[in-house]
Image 1 (spheres, rainbow, N blue to C red):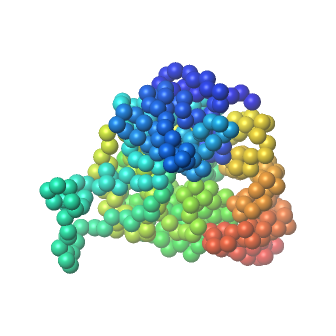
Image 2: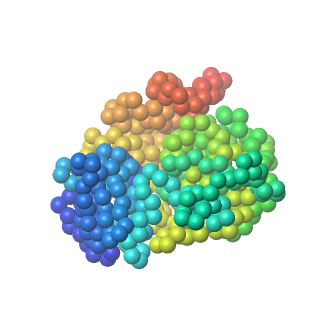
Image 3: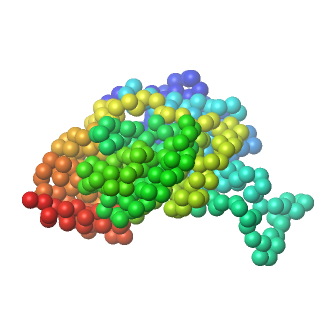
Length: 414
């Protein structure tokens, strides 16, 4: 397998341990990258925390946290996404050429610490907590009500992603669509399913769509629905919805956003910040009408990712990685997902079986295997895989209820 080329600020680095592809993430070596960006790395808390220092700025990465840093032998590695979201750098991963570029945008600025949100920066000045002279927060008058006429903002769930995930889904005509094409726009996504009794919400979203048709705004629905295009199309026609609809047969987006039930709403602003919000069309209308988010110092606007033009484009790179890391279950799952997204269901099913041999408790792998077997008309195999998924999916309504609907559908089938 060809090593992944690492370029920092236009200079090619050749560290003893180079970047590694793990699952959906590219991991990069901490020390050489930080030093190439003009910083240094110190240890804290008895070696359990790495402190990345850039002058007066510092970023803390906890070793052992899969979102922050891990040790690969004697080399500390961190996800490139973490560096991009926490520092003012731009990361460009090119799967086809096996190259990752890290480019500093101005002087080093720490935008946030891992595991925290940029809430204070995202709030308008008037909405921030008022402070007395000296910096202490002022007390709000008892019983103070919200200003009349002001619409509520979407209630957000913390701990979500920096950007929309790189996922290939299909529209109602069977054409592949990459989610990252929506980066750079204010985007509201309604995640639903024909099996989840959420079709009635489509009427409210149709109205939202009609009232917010602007070049800088995107409104779409994603059906996390293993029942397939026919079931989704029937609900769309019944509810007379005309806005864009994508089909997520294998529930890739809910897994990426850590959703265990639907319906749900995923919001992405112009800068790429993504979160899950409560279902409140009035609040969503207000959010869609807001002025573009203020760009913090050193932070660039989100833009579509480069190097992703076809669903199968990432497959060769993943296969090369698996030649030297054949026991990597997460990487094997990523390969199966890419094949399923391209409609290569038989090939995907073989890879999901291999994934299950490595990750036997992965409810997602069992579930997605069942979906692929349904697509190749292996109903008996699909039933076995789906029941295994339920056994591993305690508390995940997205899988258990969807499997129940699929089994009911298979029972009615001739």
